[in-house]
Image (cartoon, rainbow, N blue to C red; front, top):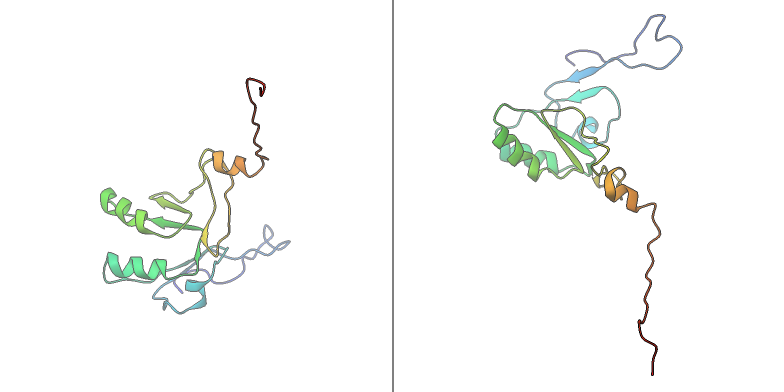
Length: 137
């Protein structure tokens, strides 16, 4: 553990359950934090030998809600992001949502989309109308 790892204390936090932002380093790929969707302020870090090994480790998971790629070489980051199996991938940003873009996960991270035209379609009831212009003779 590099930092964090426990509840926040003090008057501002005593009335709730607040966990300090936590960074874990040298985390093995078989650790639970690397294989489950951790919805909390936790960043688990695992070094990889190269992009191929990193992509393999990234896509080996059962979930794919969102992923984040950071780097100065934008072409390399974009090429990597295109191969990540996730519903949304942020490149040098920490928020992948946009009201005009669909949001939803891949794999076990859910089905369907919300936001954007794709999300709006889930609330529609499509139907088909057919009409003959001339009466049958």
